[in-house]
Image 1 (cartoon, rainbow, N blue to C red):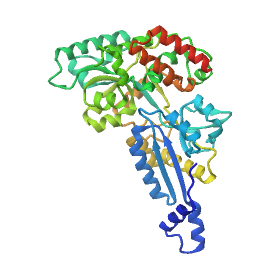
Image 2 (cartoon, rainbow, N blue to C red; image 1 turned 90 degrees about the vertical axis):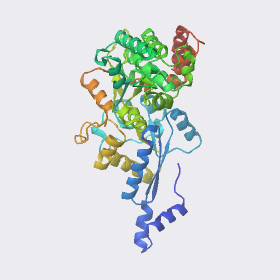
Image 3 (spheres, helix red, strand yellow; image 1 turned 30 degrees about the horizontal axis):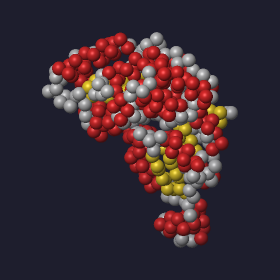
Image 4 (cartoon, one colour; image 1 turned 120 degrees about the horizontal axis):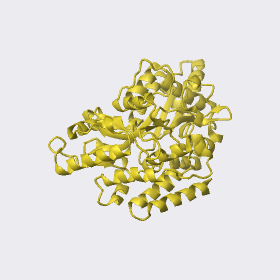
Length: 434
């Protein structure tokens, strides 16, 4: 844990002119504190920095230092590296029950915080009566699609309610693209899908969750499961095959293993090179930065799992803000105050909804801050219709989703494993990990 040196405290105190008398000096020096935040959400990195500067301007003596690792980088591995090097942050992120177990000795109990009884999704980070995290947001993911392209192709997205209708839409759109029927209006459009198989969190966590959530039911159940049946492995294969078959790498799906998040979002959906990607509402800000008109034409299609629910999207809490219980009392207090401000002040609420583009994880208090972006609104429509499945991937054994199953899916795309081999090996490694 990084602490302010005596020199830095002196400099901060000097900058705020606190040497007018000895009593003022003592008071201001005691307030000087640095809060180190290590967070995963690359989509909010710039706006979080702006929020920190705003907070600092209102709280002299508090310095907020933010480091972001996410997107194509492994946040969990980076956090473990920080711990190994003795450089743990004051505020960091945990994903759910498995992380709550793994980091339990370094998690501050937040159950006395003013937001504690007003947030959703706390069951995954509550242990022995202690609340160990503040939910980032409510998020959802499915198949994000471009309504303008669908309209031009004459495809009614409201009729896509299962795998059969999704596949039929993909076939129809693929034919129009290959025939050049949409070329005048969408000159860059080259494929139906772009699938970021390089990002094993996309494949090994999010795609697999559509199958395993319907087998295991909750993150807590997943965290306690000694084995898995992979009951819907055939349905999972269908959705993975579909995204490969109608991608720009359909002739060699092994090439999808080089497709990263930026290629999928910024230079895929964002420039209308493809019409559909498997992602969540967190992409809105990124797409808007590329082309606001495209961002405002997005919506979600369901991710159908043959043999289980086919008309739903996955909705859950992506991560939780946690406070390091081993830091100093001053740093813990400052960390909690910053999080409280971010989620409960009027300034913070505006940032959460209109800058981060989050769906607030609060039961009340955000009535004056309606969800502003089309992807967020699409998720709320799925929620209102009861067409959701839970996120259970944070209950997978540590590293299993990304480092095991995600890698097996890459090997399947590359032709190095059959689907049955990939599934069988992944099941065995789950059992070994538990």
